[in-house]
Image (tube, rainbow, N blue to C red):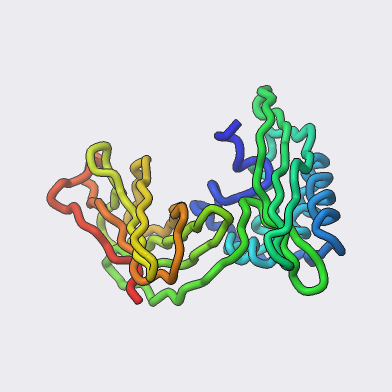
Amino acid sequence: MKKYRKKISALFSIMLVLFLVGCSKEIVRVKAPTAEEALSLFNKYNVDNNIEEMVKLYSDVYVDAIGYSTNQIIKIMKNNRKDVEINAATIESLEAVDDNTQKANVSITAIVNGEESTESYTYAVLKEGDGWAVSPDGIIGCMNFDVPVSKSKELNLNLVKEIINFTGGIIRVDVVNNSSNDVIFGTNDAKTEVLVETTEGTYKNTLEQSATVNKRSRSSFMSSIDGIKGEIQKVTVTNIYDADKDGNAIDTTKRDIIVYSK
């Protein structure tokens, strides 16, 4: 079931390679009077496959963290739910973290490609203004970073967001490849690592799969940083290569890139 998590109620594992456009009017998001009511409604809409009503209940923090308009979010969700049937979504627990934050565990039973399975998901339910809204993935905070203008004829990597959840954080790095070469992140022998230095220490995440960004294209990626604490001072992405004409990494081009330095 884990490989299907992205299809059920959240976007984070699939959102960053999609660049959708649209000018339709944004939906009006709503708040529920209590945390339990917000979560109960969200579960109902999830089972009913009512994506529009689900998205209306997303928290401001969650929408900011995703970085897309609500209409774009709806399009992504609908596309990823075509082969999914949600049979049940049940609140297992809901407990207060503070006056404005509650942590929920939700059990979801779904059929994906004919296979039924049940798994537990962690949500945050946040008080925003005069009501409560839902943050799938346990997202409780989002910090946006200023992004400089991309340089021509170069590979540009920039830290865009730090997203805070119950277990640590997630950073988003935008990739703008204005160079004349395809670029490879990591190989089997030298995987790309994301090194995050904060006021509290240094944290590392390894990207297990290699990825190619074509020349003159845009992309981005997420990196989970478990247990991260403190203010980010520096972010470095390691083991980046130019690709040869056959798509293989050129060893002599291996480099590390600082994507943020305070």
